[in-house]
Image (tube, rainbow, N blue to C red; front, side):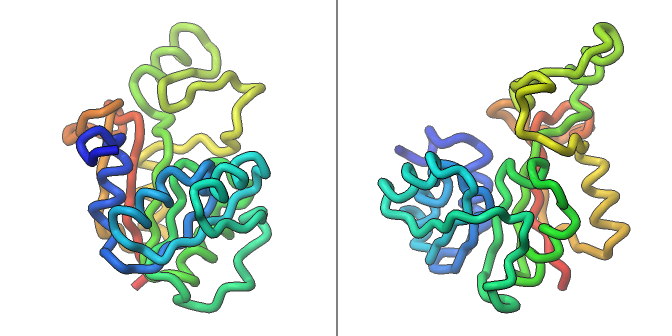
Length: 198
């Protein structure tokens, strides 16, 4: 797959990760992003995933992935054992996001997080006019069938980082496959953050 045909979110993450670095992908899914990082950036990559079916797909791609629930912590990993930890569309799915993020920032100085923005204008309109839990392209499931446990906005996450003295080193906001630079909390479907506690 050529870089220009990759999803924009993947291109952003690829740009942020240094070549030859070590990466731990928490909730790596089928390993598509992890595989790209290995191929394009020659990273030393490892994934953690709870879905056995997804792990089979990762193994078929030649990836090193462990079956584990990231809500149970990362005690088997030492402090700063990776250059990057990635939570790509998995942060909002964990039961204890605060604990998971603390562990991610312990095992790596740099953490990349992407999540669907619950405050996108289409979600706001659906709540206001329909009075129902919204569905968007970044929140595509009905309330009873979603893996998302926490519905946060870009502003929520920015406030969260500020309250905990977590440094936002970079951020990127997108709506489908275009960049959002103005009022991202209103117009972006997805927020991507590169954070650090150093």
